[in-house]
Length: 347
Image 1 (tube, rainbow, N blue to C red):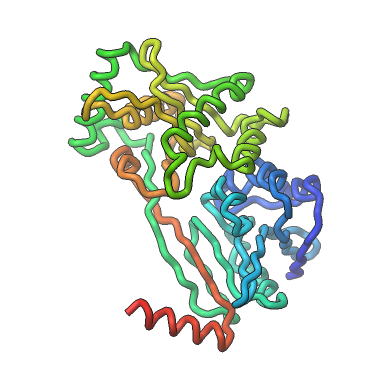
Image 2: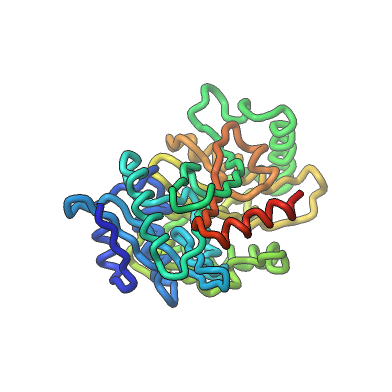
């Protein structure tokens, strides 16, 4: 298998390469939809690694590099810079067909290990924990649970949730409808995205602006990326990014930003219009419940809450799957010593 590293490339070339190879799980995060807007926002493009067999493209991936005194660190489909990665890729992996993955991964890890001053690979929120190579130490793998609502369950979606969650949703729905009126879900048209995006930004900054990681809406790179994705700054809109407005009567409960992947809804972020109506008021639960019911009625299979720990995600879900965070160090004497030292410090 021939493995090439491209330091300079045009987006048209990337589009052509992506069109030649299917990604492992048909993930929107590994498609032109996500990757091209991401590349447009970056001041410096990551390395593009392409694997070919008999001149046919079998796999590709982007590797961001950050220099470090202990050796250079490479990030799968990320740059390693928080402001550039805050858009946060999910369902991450090498871009290839499932049958080709072992050979493509082997070739890419081999090629990376041959780079001057190479030390470490990092791959975040991956669906596969199969990461091994003879030239690397044993991978360090942590996992977390992603929750989703399976909309194909027989009967009523609400009945698939716990008794306490059902009661919380019903109480919140009743409180909101008694106070404001009937609850409805509206999916915006592309022409409405600009105004809605600004309203979402205001509420999101109000809620998260002073948190540890802040709101992405104060990050120009994050904003630029989503303006591309939503067709605000780019006429090439794919219909895979949607903004929802949840209202009760004339009152706006808040907004949901979702992505569409095949027959799945992927919840990306929310912006909630908080008011003080007591502890029975659960606008987040109410908004997700009505969005889930809306998409179930439209025939979608899953409503995925994606990565990030939050109690409401588990409450609103009836199924789950693991995602993995991988770190792999090149097998060198220095890295073996550092690994032993870390193990000693953890005891």
